[in-house]
Each structure stands twice: as C-alpha cells, then as structure tokens.
Image 1 (spheres, rainbow, N blue to C red):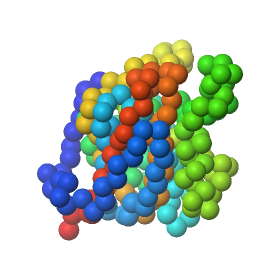
Image 2: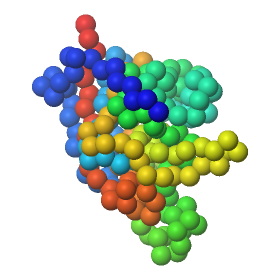
Image 3: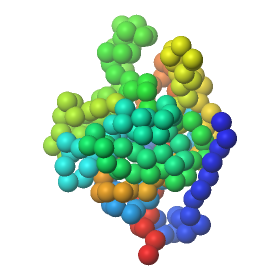
Length: 216
C-alpha cells in the first residue's frame, strides 16, 4: 500500500500544546479539543497502538468501527478516513499517515483471548483490555464501555474469504498518524503489551502522543 503523508508544516515539537511519552505496555488518555490535531507516533517501529475515542461531553457516543468502515467502504483506516461515532457523527478525520496500514477489525487482546489462543500459561499476562479498563474508569466508565477499537500500525491482512491473521508490522521507527478532531473527544490508548503474536515484533516499545491547536 502506498504511504500517504499530508501534514502541516506548522506542526513542530516547539509549538505542540501537549507532548506525552507513553511507556511500553502502558495506557494513556486525554482530551483532544475540536480543531486540534493529535499525532500518534510509533517511536520504535512495529508497535500496535490500540485506540478508542469517546465524545468528551457524552461518553455514550463513542467510536464505531462498523460505521467507520461502512462510511469509507474499506476495512482499513488511512488518510482521509472519517472516524465515525455510533451516532453517525464524524469524530475525527485522519489527515496524515506515514505507514499505510491500520486495522479496526481484530480488536484488543485480553486475558481471555490470550488463554484461548496461546494457552493457560498466558492467562495472567497484561493485555490491552486491562489497559482500557484502567483508563476508562478514571473517567467514570467501566468495562461495559469498551468497544471494538482501532489498532494503529497493526498489520492484519484480510483474505478474499474473510480470514484474517495478525502478521509482522510494517511501521518504521518514527512513523505516525495525525487526526483532526471534529468535536471534543476523549482519546484512550493502550500501548499494546502483547508478546505472543507479531503485532509488536514480540517486543513492546514506548510511543509518543503530541497535540497541536488548530490553525487560525
């Protein structure tokens, strides 16, 4: 897939209004205001970044992978994709993508799925669902509020018969996506701790999140 980049020249570290370092395997959440741009950077390459979005003033409205895929007529997230809520509203628009492959079908790893896929010895390993629960509870939500998510930088080829498999990521160190918020949103991230499949190159690494104000 062709890599598309369409980023503003005005975006620099010096004028970022937020700059967050997220350790390997850790969660993060923060508010992105309407008109702001959020950059999610795969700092070391081959790192899946599980992400959810909620309307900031009404968490009942949240990211919908079904509506997002239906709106764009495709299974992957890329430049120009409108991130659609369960109410049919545009939450964000992806304006830059230096990688070109982002999944929204495979979901988040959990202790339960790890056990089924990789054996009972993996039952107590940390998982993205744990990270999501940690973060959403900070905002008064619960595990009931965790919905199918975006997996930025996760490579999940889908065969013509519908079968899909998580394979080695194609993202390089420093690859990033940028999204402009069309409403105030809460962004919730799990920097995926998975070590049993190649979504993280079997070696989870830190990531970075930057936010810029909109241009006047």
